[in-house]
Image (cartoon, rainbow, N blue to C red; front, top):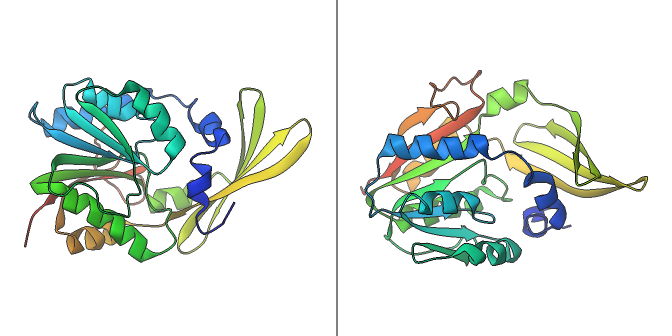
Length: 247
């Protein structure tokens, strides 16, 4: 697996879905309910779910009556997501670094640290630009990211997970710019490396700058999925609500 673009193959790997899909969605769906109750979007709102994977959270939004479009890099994930398409739910294989529909959406969402894994800052800027240009004026973007300082202080260096009888060995570490997560597979007594994930240490300051370059201005910041106040050291998440305001 190519180190610089590890995510392209990994997100389509059956082992990726085996490792992550079994995690409980209860907290994620509860968060989506809270964000919708908080934002109070009109029923006619058009929504973009960026890095939607197989579409489970897009479906949750569509079930509330909104017009939802999900995009994801993985062909396999989108193929699966398309099985649930209907008149107000659509999916497209698309790279978030490239332009998508321009000035079309009222709301855009990027849930559960589905960002930060590109090789260069320019690529990340391009992804934010895609989001900004997809929104109408005064459109809203919600990004849910890890909180760097909290992760640094609570990094679990070694752990194991078992899914469908397969044991995954997980090692985590960090440096000045990134968090790393090496995932190994132990099956029938053999160990082999699957991937080393890499996520950038983007802080609120970084996002404020990246967003502002694309006419996105942060309006609110929260520190967890229950909308508690953000604390740079104690909050497990960095949840930002930004608005597209043209200069």
